[in-house]
Figure 1 (cartoon, one colour):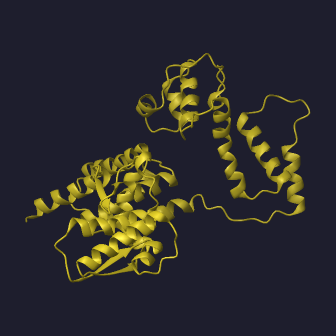
Figure 2 (cartoon, one colour):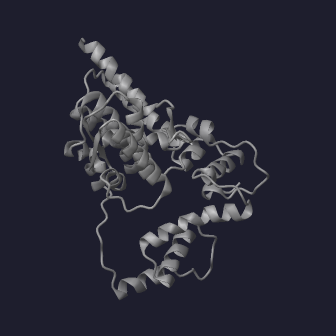
Figure 3 (tube, one colour):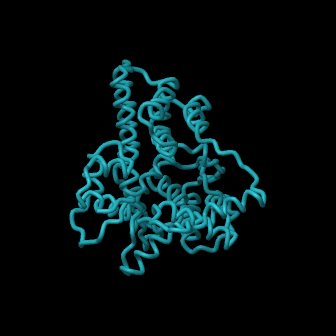
Length: 348
């Protein structure tokens, strides 16, 4: 196989990782019960617990290769419960796990197989992590595909033929310095490239690939500062309302309310972060049975801003998108029931 064929095979493997195909396996237990295992995102087919899925993989292997007999087999799994089941050390009383384990032992006894299992750390099981993305939402899969296309565009613009650690490092720095991407966006790009580059180009994520990320994070490094009583008093005075109140910006009101909530309740930062679910509670109480998605409120805010005679560029800046096409294709809602615009700190 020449170098061009190797390159094409690697790109095909990368595409398979990012654009998986649906695979379903029907497993029959004791000739009476049939279970279906799916590796694609579907809420109706993802009811099995991860422990059951791990054991189903082992059972599927034995059923798929009936000619394997009189030999020891070692399963490397990243779930300790599944390992204990195969080692006959299970403490779970789940009927499903017990049924799958029983079927495994019946096949092993009939074909004189010695089954054993060892625990594999999750961080070492990169291929399984890549396949697990097939259980993600469609929006997450599209996001990973977009990250891969961005990386391919970077290679074409720079005329790069061979991918290396230095190329990945240059790409991360390019995102931060040239594209002004946030730290979370850089982290998402790196996560999207991890499995394709490992299996397509044999590149691992060592410390050098994190150089661009750590360099970017140094610009936003926040050092902890102890707040004494005098500093707290100054802070409270700064939050006091003015003598002649004028309508303050909504972001200042929100920060003030959030801080006073923390001060009155004594909540930790992690507990305050949980208050972000309040938006979902409000939507569900106003419209029972409707589960809001993560971008629903942002979509409505951007649509209100645009439909109330604001320009596309203003909407793009308010939503912090790199281009107006992103807003038009994914966020623009044309049907709005005459709601007064208070979106994104802009009034009509």
